[in-house]
Length: 608
Image: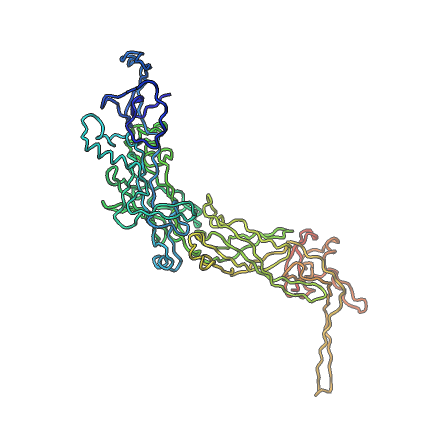
């Protein structure tokens, strides 16, 4: 195994010494090795080389200078770059506040409030500005490019040019902390410090040695959060196009940074590039509650792609229409151009809409809970990250010997996360998790639900919630109550006794000389044992009657119907043995199906 880095394998490289190791004992002889000035070949990307290896001893013995011959050299080898192109440096122009960080840019507003006025009132920036700087390179990597430091090598080079190039080479030791006017800020999590560049023009230039192989940048958006209206990822206009692409301006190594600005907009997600020849600025405009995640790679030129090792292995050629070449040039190959990923957010303090509509309760026989369906429930999915649901209803308690009483019940149903980036949704229901309300019994209730919606962006309003913990919430009691049906059949009524119902009326006639008393009857009063309201609110009693238009019931069906017999004291017309709907007066008449009757519909004369 042998390695050649562009210098003689036997002659020491003239270089600076960092932390020299203590000298080892010298051998009992002196070795001096030197090369003829200008005789070493240069290691350059894209150049072709052949190698020969010969063995010699310290006394100079071994093969002659013309051995081995050319026929013993290796095949031609093209020197290609395998080192990835580092992502651009992203440097803030202000300290990070409330959720902003190295990989997150945030602008903040509140519904019904002007963006600039809101920012001024709470001390937030109205727009966020950062600088994209060309990535840093090592000196060793820069020396392998044709054009970098070439004027400082070879015989007869002017010493002033050497000094000039040496000064450029010393920039390999500098980093973002050396930006003119930069200051250090403490990280919000206490993990260390970061550098903040001055925001005032002119744009600061990178003090380090920029990567010679990086020509331009291309901002590419990842799939955006799901649009709750369509169920598909939201759109982003201008990304991965000329509006989001730019060459690094200036000449190496004095390349100019690019400003990256995020600002609030009325709606949508767009990027635009500043026109003209002045300093370059990318502006990303986001509507309320919109966000986009952007990959920012450093991109090589199309001419340099064939000299890159990874694309060469993937099939890159000299053909600029080759898809492998195109992907490498546009920074879409992460092995060639690993991107810097930044999420840009237009955070809103409160959800953009109050919860509306109602929940639908779904229960099966025997269930003690209810699944809350959301097909009739609405909220703003983009801006709502969580909902807290509270329920209120009235239960009727019948505990003898006390009379039945009503009891108001308030219960917390739970907190439920609202999905933001599911794969594909059935809008808008797919954004909601499964919601279940546990009652602990099978009774029927009419429930009023109160929903508190919490902003998806509450983490970005720390200084606001410190003053008011509920500043990022909206609360509303849903307009319609949810009917939660009973899931158990009520117990059979306990009939204590049945007595005729009689009403007496008295009137005076003839100036009061005649007193007339009248009795009206034709009814029965049924006395039932307690408890009542076992199945919940609106529990009612019903007399089951056979439909007059139906054929006579069977003996098995008669057991579950209302039957009548003759009066044992008075001669009366023989009544029908099975009562029909004409024999009973009731406020409500309904048709029901009972399993005991074999599915035949009968009439229920309901008395609420």
